Length: 120
Image (tube, rainbow, N blue to C red):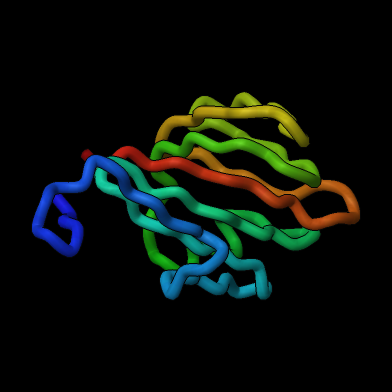
């Protein structure tokens, strides 16, 4: 737990994923930055036209996709779950998908999304 100048425990944590040193650049130039709070990571992703998780992120990390909770700010993406079911998500929509999924940007604009990971 963080403390203030007097050593008192703080019950407030503030971060900004747009002003973070923790940035991942994907193979196609897309990026995702994140900030860590006590119980969650908040990510901000800019995924360019043509970006696909399995091509531009999974091959880079060598890992399969994990559970994701997200919110689309702009652009559109298709998410295919491990069972092969595909759904399009766009601005103003939140989603949750389990491990083993793939996702890709559709249309001619970048997809800007927030994602949330519980760490506590």
